[in-house]
Amino acid sequence: MKLRGLWQLALSEFKLNLREPAMLFWALAFPALWMGIFGAIFKKPMPGFGYEGLNYANFILPGGMGLTILASAFIGMSTTLATYRETGVLKRLRVTPLKTSTLALSFTISQIIFIALGIFVLFVIGKIFFNVRVLGSWAALIGMSVFGMITFLALGSAIGSVARSPRAATVITMLIFMSMIFLSDMFLPVSLFPTWLQPICKALPLTPLTTVLRDIVYGTPLNELWQLGIIASWLVLGSVITVKFFKWE
Amino acid sequence: MSVIVECEHLTKSYGNLVAVNDISFKVREGEIFGLVGPNGAGKTTLIEMIEGLRKPDSGSIRALGLDPTQQGDELKEKIGVLLQSTSIQPDIKVKEALKLFSSFYRHVPNNIEELMKMLSLEEKADSRFKKLSGGLKQRVAIALALVNDPVILFLDELTTGLDPQARRNMWDLVENIKTRGKTILLTTHYMEEAERLCDRVGIIDYGKIIALDTPRNLVNNLSAESKVTFNIEDKDIDASKFKSVKAVSQVQKIDDMFIIYTDDENNTLQELVRLADKQKFRVSSLRTESPNLDDVFLSLTGREMRE
Image (tube, rainbow over all chains, first blue to last red):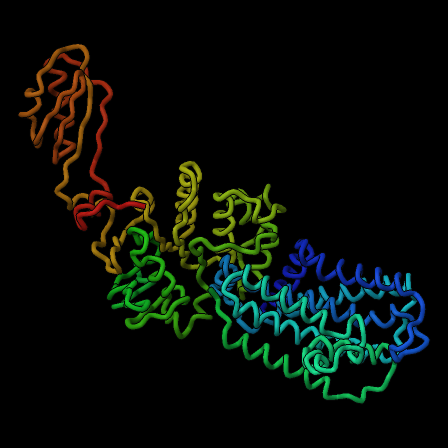
């Protein structure tokens, strides 16, 4: 009964994501295109990236995963929440016996399924065209991805809760989205950035996420556990803001 | 008939604005009860407090024996709600929406196929919600409100924004739902709608119920007059002829057309027919305009009810 509501809502939201062109572009097409283009441009192994012997596609694969997670969780969650609040969808759900916790969990599950699909697409492209490899543990890769998803979902819902309108939510989200992409190590290792900028890059959640994902892909042992701490702090921050500012209407 | 909703001394303010001001009323099982009044009168605040969406500042509510502020979850299982101007997910298909909403309830006795048939939504089963016309959207909203076979149905501004044809269809639908034994609490700012649908209406203005009765009693208690209009073409008759007819207060004649004001429509009509028979003239284009709830509102508030 209640469990049925949880799954039905998660499934519906997943299907609705597939019908949303913006979501299809940012979460599925954009990361795939990005990886395809950069992978094709830099086919040779690159010096100076610290991971000799593997090609650039292998370097950007974790970045692509981060991008998919960021785009889908962050954009999807914030605009969906803000739009549903503005159009009264949340209010309509509220007069049903559906619990707030069930609602939150359903939205989370639907996004996770959607992001998993995006990452799968990324791997298929990477495998077929660039022969990308995962040298580390798959379980760690999946676990880390889910950790990242939940963190960015929390941040997305925080913005969706704080923004006054769907338009505001989109603007704020895109600003943060773009800055995070350029300030992360998705294109280049952070060590190549100006020294004054490096701490900022490292404090943002996307950098540690891609770094850890990359370590797993390359099979390097995880020795910088503080990176997980940074991600966890963002998760806590996002959750607190959401709980504090979330409104039904 | 037992009481199914009972509100006592409900008050709710937003800042300085007192949206609902010490309102008490009861809804009986099986009736259509209407809250009628202009926009901003407090209808939606009132109905949403009963649904458990808003908390009253003071006063008490019992709906189906439950307190919406304390036992909201239990209450939500048993009520169906059509909110004012809210949407569902724009890209969801009609049938998907029905399936989704029915998954939220413990007991779902209503078969989705039957529900779609009852609301003539079968052809739209695979249409996306955002593509539907206003009337169809409201029908989907009613279907969603009925998935749990609720005891009480709340309809907030059901026909606002619909064209006259869609509005009439909606009225038929509501009457049909009533025959299935549901209690309906609705709000409207169309007096015509209240008169047509409601067993009892509460007229609400500036957060207070200023009159509560059956539409017929409300109108009958008015000392307003009916207007009888007719033409006499085959004979030249003087307006004064009708002055002496019982209960008539005033007669006007414009060419062939006569307008009579009366406070006893039935008697006046009978006498008119008798007179026509006796004096051999033919009455044509006869029509009467009785006072209605609009006149009731006017006489209570001194203002016209405007949208």
